Amino acid sequence: MPRFFIDLHDGLQPIHDEVGFELPDLPAARAKVTRIMSAIARDMLPDVERQDYVACVRDGVGKVVYRARLSLAAEMVD
Image (cartoon, rainbow, N blue to C red):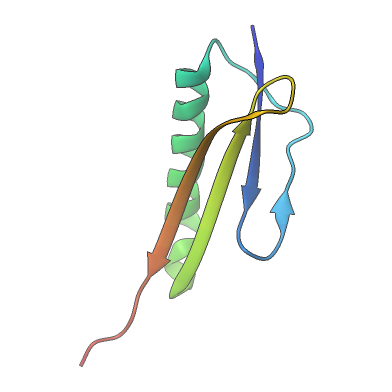
């Protein structure tokens, strides 16, 4: 099974995946990223008013094959 690596960046500190995940194909890697980004939205975004997260999926040779972005811009309204 191919190995995919998912790097995360929050605009401040990148997290470089050195272990990766064995997944059957790119659609499975996309689904994994979607679950990760959903967890970030649920667990981390409620405490901020503006934040961007980017996840890049690399294949076994290091080529970026998929990218996902999660953005939040919130503000109080009178």
